[in-house]
Image (cartoon, rainbow, N blue to C red; front, side, top):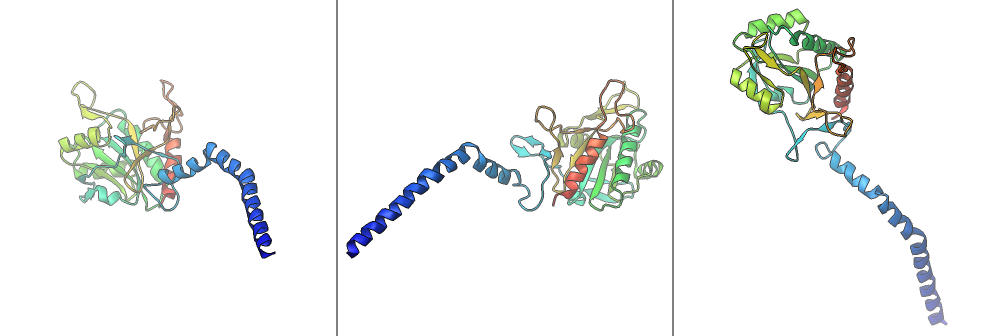
Length: 251
């Protein structure tokens, strides 16, 4: 009698296992085919640079499969202080290359930067790094006067001067933002009018373009009020403000 009960128990267990397989295994297979598991794994990979807390949808600039970080630098700012890349750690900041006697795009770029500065006024984790490409003229005193003229008040906005060759190397190689001397152009120097956006961990960040690739840089010449220039290119200052706000939320 006990043997029969045992057999009935085995039969019941086998039936339950069979029923589970019929009902649930196809659902698990469908979930894998639908990439639900893959999506979860991808999320964990996307936050590998910051495994804790919030991370925005802004892309990292990758070169040779590695996210590009700001290179090391050390210059003197408008207050005579030595400023390095370490001083910007834990801050979201913008990078520009300019010179104080620039007769064309620099005044427009810096007016836009001042507007951005005022938008994020009072935030200790926002700053700007401005590197002059004409250090022979742009001494500490000249940069100090320039800062006062444009209303630069953010204590994390450093206008920096140093060795010209080091500045050009930083621009062209470190940030891939063109800067150089050209005696045939007005002012004697030419440079990009773009801004680079850096996150709190020193990575260059940007949003996607229409093809899903990082935009890399943001147009710094056209103001929000202008909306577009004579060539029909639209302003990106409003876009930049949105993306700064995103990075400020990251840990």
